[in-house]
Amino acid sequence: KNQVEQSPQSLIILEGKNCTLQCNYTVSPFSNLRWYKQDTGRGPVSLTIMTFSENTKSNGRYTATLDADTKQSSLHITASQLSDSASYICVVSQTGTASKLTFGTGTRLQVTL
Amino acid sequence: DGGITQSPKYLFRKEGQNVTLSCEQNLNHDAMYWYRQDPGQGLRLIYYSQIVNDFQKGDIAEGYSVSREKKESFPLTVTSAQKNPTAFYLCASSQQGLYGYTFGSGTRLTVV
Image (cartoon, rainbow over all chains, first blue to last red; front, top):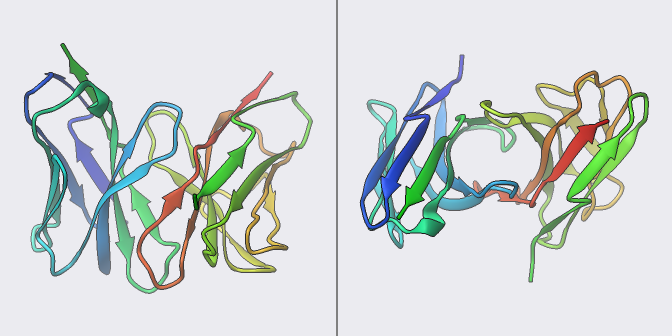
C-alpha cells in the first residue's frame, strides 16, 4: 500500500532556531516528492519539488533532501520565523498518472518567541 | 495574477441539502482536482478531471458529484447522500505532464 509518513506530528521551536522535518514513503513507482506549507484555513503552497535524480533543493530558508534509495526525505528550516508556523505536508507522486498523489498527514510547526 | 479561486470560503449546510462549491482557475491548466481534508488525515482525492467533459472518481467519490463543462471551472456538489460532509475542501489544478500542483484557498463546509 502506498503510504507517506511524517514525523514529528507536531513541533514547537523558538524563533531563530533551526528544525528538520522527516518524511518516509513507500510509494512506487516513484515520480517526484513535494513539500508544501499550509497555513491554517488556507490551501497548501509548494515549497520544493524533487525528482528521483535530485537529492537536495532549496527555496530560501527551506532546504529539502531526498534519498530515493532509503525512500526518505527531510525538510530543514533555517533561522525560523514566526511566519513559519504552519503545517508542512510531504506529497509523493507516482509515475504514469498525474492524479496519483499520496499525501502525508503533515507536521504542525509552531514557532514561538 | 493567475491562480485558483474557490468560493465561498465558508459554507453551512442543513442536513438533507445539496450544496455546490465553486472552483475557477485562470492558469490554463488541463487537469483539475477536488480533495477533502479532515483533521489528522492526509488529503483524500474526491474527483479529478484531465480534460473538459471528462472526469473520474477518486478514492472517496460517494456522495459527491462534479461537472467539467469549461476548462476553467470544476464545481463540486456535496449531495445529501454524503453522510459526513463537514470538512475542508481543496481544489487544485495542474498542467498535464508537469508535476506541479496549484491549490486554491479552500472552502470549509459545516453541516448545521
